[in-house]
Length: 212
Image 1 (cartoon, one colour):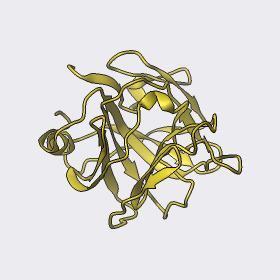
Image 2 (cartoon, helix red, strand yellow):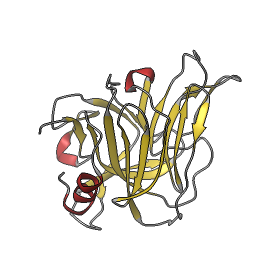
Image 3 (cartoon, one colour):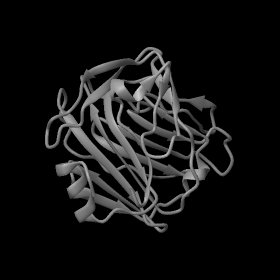
Image 4 (cartoon, helix red, strand yellow):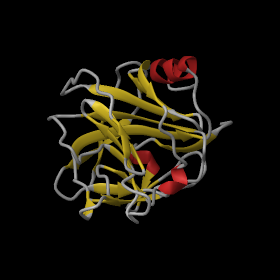
């Protein structure tokens, strides 16, 4: 679709010989230990199947991208509260240049760090249920959404090319101590990236219908 960069449905049909298939533009990734073919969310639209991550050594590694205006969205299911370095979806910088940079979808927040500056707005945690996360960047700031509704915004912004690690079920990053990041116990379904900052109406549509 127009403005669509990647969509990984995380369905069994879009999984092939240890690879996760990008059904939009072929930016495929590699699967390391995740369980495929589990029931995905049917909260609003039927998102199909999902991958399950055990929190021990399961992850998916995906390509990185270079966009100044973008949106990322995915369904996540948490059986337990996440910790500081957990992420169902994670973007991290491991070169250490300019300070710590990372994006994390966690059980009660979307965590954003840009070159050592952080903004970490929280929402009400609900375990054992599917939640729909969306983070948008218009080139000058972030807007944070949960289940199709905006809950905060900030003036932090960054180009996606500043992250050299892009993972599901884990986040890898470097701070002033060293390289960090946890494997995370969670389920994930229908992960998408757009090369635009979605409007509130588009985010709401995406949550309710699966299309902007």
